[in-house]
Image (cartoon, rainbow, N blue to C red; front, side, top):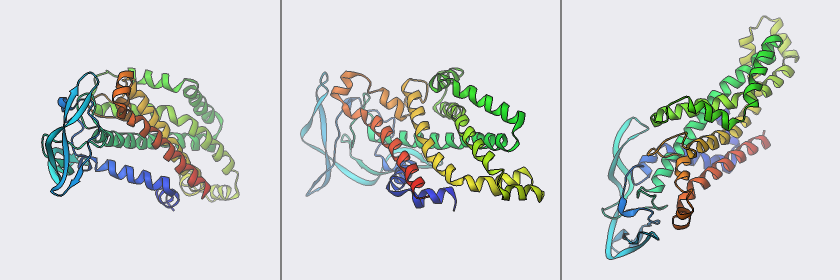
Length: 336
């Protein structure tokens, strides 16, 4: 059974919720009513606006600002907007490839559907949250893949051959582990100019997180490898003339797969928190492209937290994703 099938078969409720969130984020532009940078200055810090069912159909109230200081709003008397499904709206590229302008739900102008309220520029928070969640998923999964590639390879080579190769790899890993990860990430990010595009910033963040995360995994894989190479089936494979590559692929990795599956699920939260932390500090994904970190940075003012507490939802989503991935790893370990 492959790692992906194990995660789906043994993931429990946490795995199903994560799969649902990941699938929704992949088609986020279709599910959300507006583009992540669709600005409405007349709805700055506007509260959530939910559809209402009436005899004439589904409508939303049209809001107007009452007090810009307290950021209070009220519905305009007698003014509503009709809600439509599978309607035309902001243009986007589904999966980054297919151009489209279809959205699951939208409202006639000047009405607006806003399930989580708006930010300082009147941008729909729900739309930005879904797109930002996709970025966190993809960055963390890609970063874990790179980290595991280096960590597993280094651990296998170190544990299999030992000697000076083992010493060089382990001492290098200890150097990375000795440096506080946050300072290492900030230093690595500082090597690049602050105004680089979001796509390049995402690659830099992924590389920085993978650079930090491989050493601990390599030490564990080294220990497992050193115990397995003494087993009779490994000695028999060596005696039969099997190459190290064949031993790695056919014998060592299959016997490590239960641990690796659990380690993957428990490593992803670290990458999610790392990306959110760098973006929160202004060293990661830069606005206007949303990420869970830079969205949370918009809510760090006490005034904003008091008048627009819905901006904290990105922080709650980070906590939820971390808890779900940790529960997924525990559930797989319990059922192995």
